Length: 128
Image 1 (tube, rainbow, N blue to C red):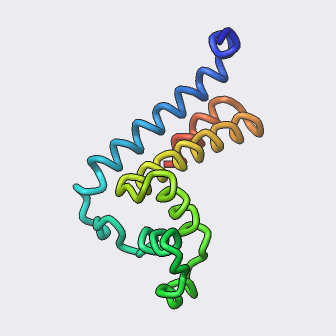
Image 2 (tube, rainbow, N blue to C red):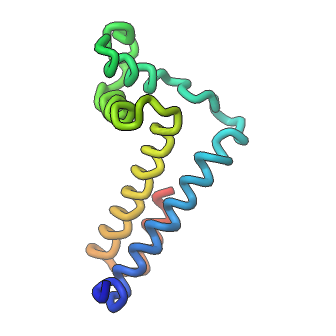
């Protein structure tokens, strides 16, 4: 714990991660349903349905035409989230939130390593 307390870069990285997490959770729980620019149905592009199909052993067969336009990795990740949570409806939005946090932390770290700390903060805030 002393390393975190003594290192300002680590503290700033943790702050970036916490701000990203709060921002994404507010978006998931409040902003998504309030917006009207895109469809705010729970699964407008059938990715969760593909994930459910995978964990029920049906594979991608019912979604053959959709896979011509999309890659299968994201439905596989969703299937893994459903496998862990038992097909909880909040599994995918929470997974997205954690992926957003990871993106912000990665942008922060890359900006810090390549340029400087100020650029890292700007990069992490622009990842949104």
